[in-house]
Image (cartoon, rainbow, N blue to C red; front, side, top):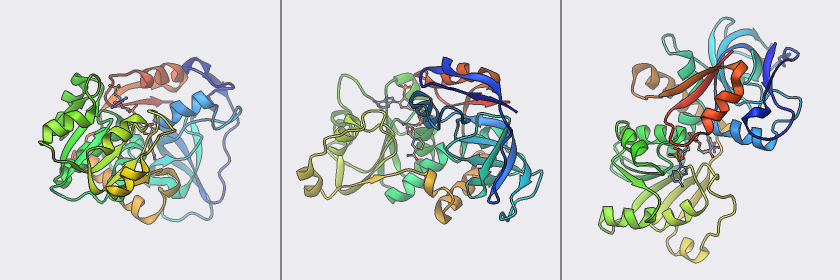
Length: 318
Ligand SMILES: NC(=O)c1ccc[n+]([C@@H]2O[C@H](COP(=O)([O-])OP(=O)(O)OC[C@H]3O[C@@H](n4cnc5c(N)ncnc54)[C@H](OP(=O)(O)O)[C@@H]3O)[C@@H](O)[C@H]2O)c1
């Protein structure tokens, strides 16, 4: 089969489009013919860090048609369309993937959109569940214009929460308003916490969903209510963060680390993700596709996915 792989860490140009051996599915896996690949933040980080490894096919999220079902797998049929997640193997024509990370795609849902659902929107739904956000509460979404952020904004707004979101560009945040964002906070000259205090007249937010991390989290904690939950999803703003322990205990804040991948097949995340497919089919969850590239141009696709000021997912098709 054809695959887009790299032998060294680096920028998008490390990709080579080559012939590799077809994957052989294990007893608990499905083999799929890939039809759409969603490029996730983890794919970009993996390429920079040479993960999963030199000779392996990289990539997290892909949707396609089932060709073969491992003998230990129930609940799927050959020919069915599924979306899949794994730590490697999406950037190829064929993929063997654990069945616990596979989700049936409802008839009528575009396969490209389906490929994006488990990781971005799935993480948004899981993070809001962990945060215990309630209708009528105020949630602050750090990185509201990103793939995870945009889904978080929509799901929180549908729940009946007041949604405040941060971003680096006013024009991007203006577009996120169409998805349920109540107030956009452009980070830059003034800190987000200063702007939020002015906006809320001194009141504070009930929940933080943080796709940025680092200084953005430290600043946001200044406007989290006593007893509030902050869910940390991403750390591209900095892995090593100085938390003020005194402030944390004085305000009884909880910071929750969220990594969906290992838990995706568990009962509650699976139910939440399955609901997202139905929402997307009905148009209750909107997932804009920014651009589609052929798999043979994985470098172009990753380059586009790394551009700032973009809204919507970049996908590839074999
Ligand atoms: N924990 C998990 O299970 C999990 C799952 C999925 C993703 N993630 C991680 O979550 C992070 C976000 O993923 P994604 O797919 O949503 O990324 P994305 O689509 O690339 O979006 C990132 C967004 O952050 C914005 N941004 C950058 N710096 C900012 C800042 N200082 N303040 C506010 N906004 C800022 C960008 O806006 P501009 O482009 O306008 O600058 C962009 O809209 C990544 O680190 C990813 O690896 C984690």
